[in-house]
Length: 390
Image (cartoon, rainbow, N blue to C red; front, side, top):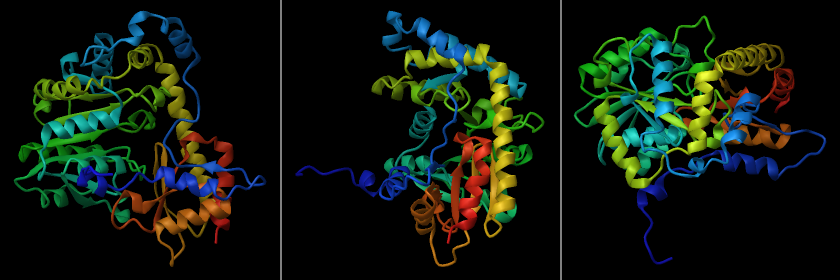
């Protein structure tokens, strides 16, 4: 190879999921079924009414064409209504941009805000795709510790000490990936006020907000005032709540001025979400409210089942945090780092979890279990395999 690869790309750590999947393939055991807790995907198909609708429209010629770069008018309006209803706010479609997945929405927001040499505050443990994006763009991630004694909720006062003249945004994910921690509304409000006072953005990724229990307060009242577009960039994903992971539909809600800059990026690269995916997302928003509530209850049941089984069958492990799709576990192996511990589970227990080291510094004693794709009846078996690992 004579040409030179971008050194920023070369230096970016590879995503961990393919590597861990390879560990199980190298040690097949027909007598011990594989339990895969790697990827945060729903363990059920889309609603039958949704798939029937898609079968109806898939032959329309428009389904194979590019959509308007901001997204279809119907989806943008539907999401604006949903956001306004969820948060008691007034959000219009001019504040909405539809992306090819929430990861792309994050990428577009970051590239619109920052240039090489700038920095963003990224609580650790962090979602590794966020860190990879910053690394590839030559942006510094300033890690804000999220400590287990605080329920893995970051401290706004500590974040304030990390801000300097090159800081462009604070990034929050709640419910969190990888820990499952749900940030209290008061904490998010403090982060918002901090970002506003320092004239930087608050990027709030709420991919998993639809799986908060009905009696649990939604993240914030940040949309309630007229000044929210000056600070807030809200990211959302349709893939989890409507089982549309393969359709690649996400969204950004922000100031109309920032949206205009993001559209330049998306128009240049022609990376709008698939038309059929946007139709699916709009159908979900407008017609699947009850289905969404049922899946919220289902996930809450899986969370409770995991917690009960864990407490009964894996006493030597520590449940650091749990919520939405994830359990963040402190492993008991004093002499092993997180990769070695995850490999041990894959080889001996046919149980696939992600090593905590993939989510940032100081995470070597932790593993992430994405339990949303397994039925509640399987939780005791997961806990038994954890408890018998040695």
